[in-house]
Image (cartoon, rainbow over all chains, first blue to last red):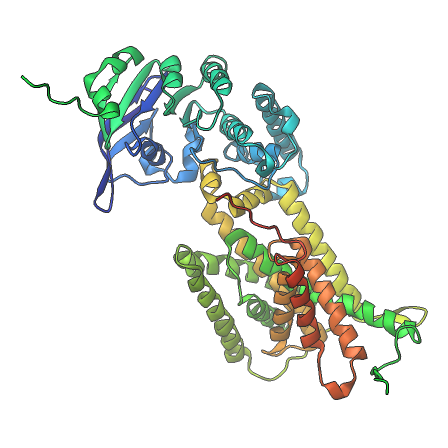
Length: 258
Length: 309
């Protein structure tokens, strides 16, 4: 059984069919790309998986969990974390505080433990800080630890969001356009980073991205959406040569005169 | 011809004791506004709702405390009433405010105005219009403490201490507990909060419960200095709102500084403006607010929202 199984996922907004029977699977330990022209429904898939939208039909199974039966705040507890295309950070909190909130789902101390500074709360707090420190180190964010997030440049904010997803020790991470707004060099670093997410953090990666160079370089498998339907799936090579994909991106070739 | 300004009392340079006394009393009565302003700011920060019902919810809690006091001592009745107020506040969020949370902001304002009227009406209906004898109780009773000729009553000291205790407790809660961090996260970004596993609905209820508890404390302290009737909290609410706006609406520190500023200005106006002008303490307090807001539209401690366009 695959780590993630999305089966016949459909969602409509009013008369607009945003997803129409989309199915795909992600194997544990894979890096999978989800691509398609603007409005193809890529981010909508992420929003269905994390409980932001409720699909009209279909199922999403992560390990043994039926994600559609869960409240949005329960989903991270199963091991699914995500980043957003347009950042969703806690702006006036410091980088460290963002990473502490990021571990909310794995902390247990209650109010009394915290106010009375019971050992269990103190230990848990220290572990959370240590964990945040490791991730900050890994993403080269240590020097920004105590800075309010709102004042950081865009590229750093994106890394903070990734860090916040990573501190929860997810087994599947959903990256929504991580290369958006990055410079050429930063994209090269990102390729290495995504590989090390899998190889060092043992996280399976599902990636929505417009930057083809990035997607083709890191993905084991690529799924292509167009107007809410899956039109192709395969290795980066297979997908690049698929006529339906070329048509979706470049338009249909003109009928040749006979 | 010269214009002679006649003050109602001797000016500060001739009677510094009176001046010091009025400042001190102003700080004490301002603390009362500060407590209620804190409750208003807490709700505004976490839910972007201006709770016009905050004062009357506190009044209702104070009447509950009064009822408990017919059966027990002050302190158990005090804490029990706070607990009831907190549960009530959380229930109001869950069942009254949440259904209109996604509606335009005017709807929630109308709902909180409704809370004002409902809780005032309920208090009148249950406890009647006769003023209730209400304290001062236990430690808040006794001879004033004097340094030289400047004196401060036990109740005023009590209100100051209670304000400080509330501030310290809120600070510890918000800065040093997991719950506080989750409450702050919810106030800033609900989508992201849900994503990292914060049960946002519960946080909103807890936020309202906390604010209602703080509001009930304000009511109990106000009733001891002003007596307990269904009109007790109205003036306090006006000044508390002014304090919250002066402080910047989303800043707890601003609420306290705003409350104390307004308390002092109000007292000084009451002391020095001649009686023929009329009772101007309210007008002068609001004049100060208008002047401050002209210079700093976001209030003394408010954050300016910057949006990239």
